[in-house]
Amino acid sequence: MPDAPFDATLEAVSDETLARRIAFGGQGSTDAEQAELYRRFAPRVRLYGRRHLRSGAAADDLAQEVLLLTIERLRAGEVRRPEEIGSFILGTSRMMVQSERRMAWRREALAARFIDTTMQTAPSSMAALDARRVAACLRALAERDRLVVLLTFYADREAPRIAEDLGISPGAVRAIRHRAMARLRDCVQGQPTASRRSDDAGARP
Image 1: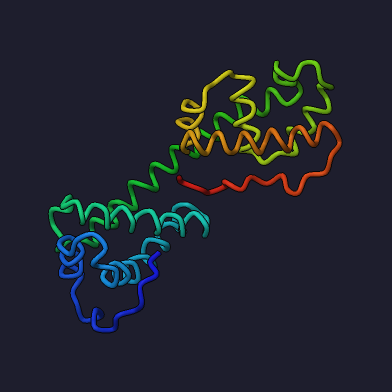
Image 2: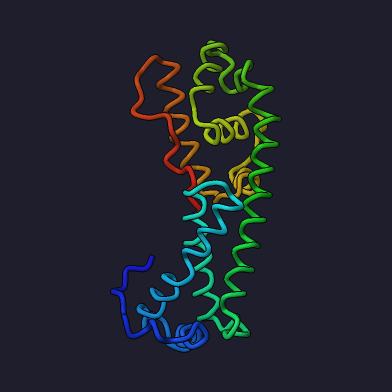
């Protein structure tokens, strides 16, 4: 985001005017203004993200999400003071960082509860298999993949509950579970897999 061409004439426009143009420009008619808003504020949001999330990739995701949400709010008329658009963006960044921290703590708690205590025992649906081999194959999965598998088959949780726990969508849970189970099955059967790393890592459908 965004892919609109750079418009040098917008450099002289104030942040407030830019915000107002986006708010009143209509759907699809303010690509250049949106690109300029992103150009101005994305580096600041990334810097904030790196400082508080300790990850360049997470900071990039934060900038994308914050600016998309800001544009949506502007279009919906939900930014009451466009003259303070910078403060709105900073406040939104702070809120999203706090939310991500809460989800990270929750994921860590779930990992400590399920991964560490169940790696020596196969999920009940796999009881007929070699428990040690299953445990070894589970360890070979990415951490979030293991969590999804264990929460599904060991804790008997449905996709919506797992999605809430991990801060992702139910659709992402099902996709992760499908791939993780395919990799787990190949591992248990001694077949090579292309990659055991989750393709959804960092994704916020």
